[in-house]
Amino acid sequence: MGLFKNIFKASKSKEEKQLPWIALHSIEQLQSIEQQSKNKAQVVFKYSTRCGISRMVMNQFISAYDIDTDIDLYYLDLLSYRNVSNEVSYKFQVIHESPQILVIKKGVVVAHASHGAVNGLDLSQFV
Image 1 (cartoon, rainbow, N blue to C red):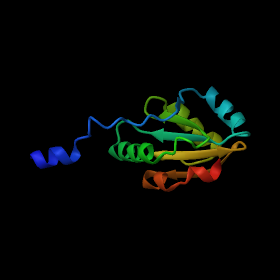
Image 2: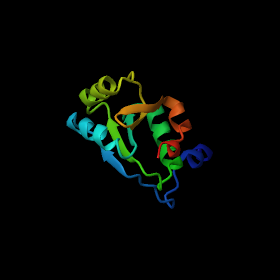
Image 3: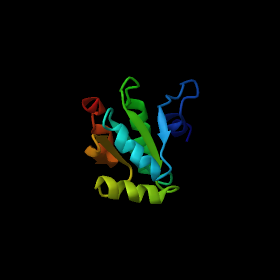
Image 4: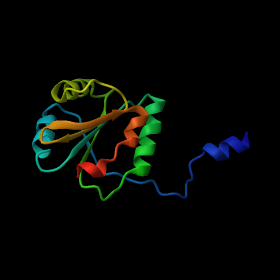
């Protein structure tokens, strides 16, 4: 049992990487995202706080994220803000999935991915 505990235990000496998340919690923010996307890529990361796959994808995303990427990075807790998640799907014409990432430029989604494909999306190509 000790072997598994050591394998899966997070290292406490390792400092956790912090991303420049912007909380997405209102439908009104979507208008701002659309406007800001005319000048800079906007990324929406939809995430379920109760899903193990979402947690795994989020951890991988955080580990791989390039801090120097010039984008605005929004985090949407879709369980707490389901109405916002529904509006994201409607406004940007992307079928809801979780976890899911959307890249918005010039008011439209130029790329999106879900589940394990989230981490295969190269955000630097949208800067």
